[in-house]
Image (cartoon, rainbow, N blue to C red; front, side, top):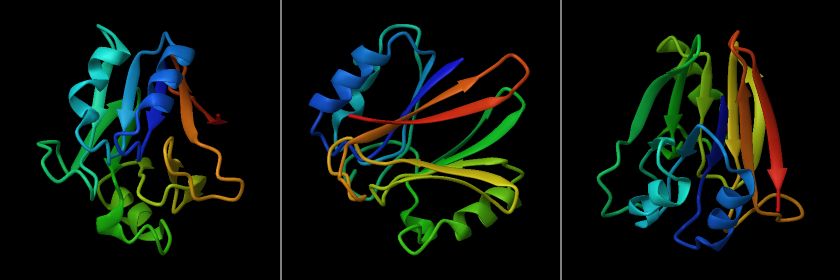
Length: 161
């Protein structure tokens, strides 16, 4: 299974559309918030048959997206959130603890516009960065590709434009 993970596109969708076309085919698209209205078009861009999981960001004022989602990817339980309710700007430790308390072994977030991948308290915590307004050194737009094999092993590939 190939999963495209993006965040913080802030309705500046050229890079998102480019990445979608470049990475096709993929089985699932996860958007971790701050689509700012583009969430209505993203499923069409991803294509029929692509599973979608999108959560509400702190700038998604008029969206009806869920604040958080919990889902299964193979044998893994995953928490999806934008992250601002967990203080991720100060560090992802609080999010890792919350995910662990819910029985999740993976937590995905956005909000900081900085790519991140680490294991904290036994939880794989990741942020794909931002495709529109990156804030890490070098400020390259970023996203993540996750490949899950039939045995549930996950490969995380941070990618940059």
